[in-house]
Length: 303
Image (cartoon, rainbow, N blue to C red; front, top):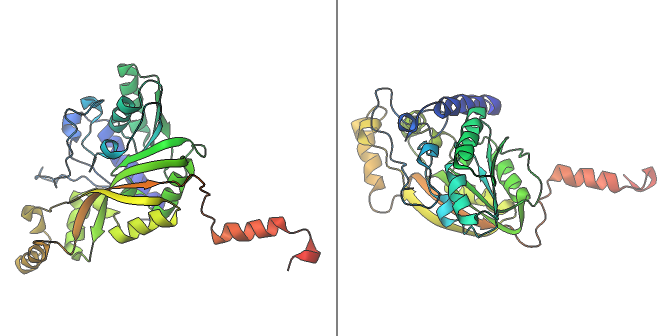
């Protein structure tokens, strides 16, 4: 099992290769550490989202890496400061700019240098002066406190090893009263080991996905309120892929339990949450100890 830094390097290398490809070559592939296209160009898992007709959509910036449309649900207003986490070639940033307008500001954050370069070229070609792209890690964002009115992200948080830290950082950069709308991949119930292996090979987004309940709990524990599930849809694994990792009996059992109201499966979700207007950053136990020690007046009053 790779450690956190190794996983990040895999993502950088994979997304770097995608950034250097043409949109037609990349579309629908590479939603995570591994490509979602099979070794023989098999039909990929359907995570496609419909940008066509959406204001601000730029085909050259759409590499087919998303699993949702967070900007569609983000309630962006004219003049807002918007931050896109894992901005890739910039497509969601450009859609956000169409909403925030020339008086707003859009910042894309990505940890893949090649993606940053491609996004900056796209912005320059479009002549956008209020859209910028910053190199950085979502777990340690090089952005100031209370910066954003809105944070969006499209199928990226699942790739972050320390999701709790990433969500706390999201809380930090939002202004009090600000909010996020994030599309991501989550799991429900216990999936067969073969299914997870299949998903890891063909839909890298799923490799780092966690249980939906755990995901929402992390958001709540970070201090967010008014948590709303804006959209949810099941990601269906094709039989052509399942048969590579499950026996006929296992596949039949998996499909049977998925009928009607599935008790388990892989889902694309879009989650909305607000930072309270009187928000304070969550304080860890270690920070509490450090604060207590710093406030001591001397040896005579500290145990």
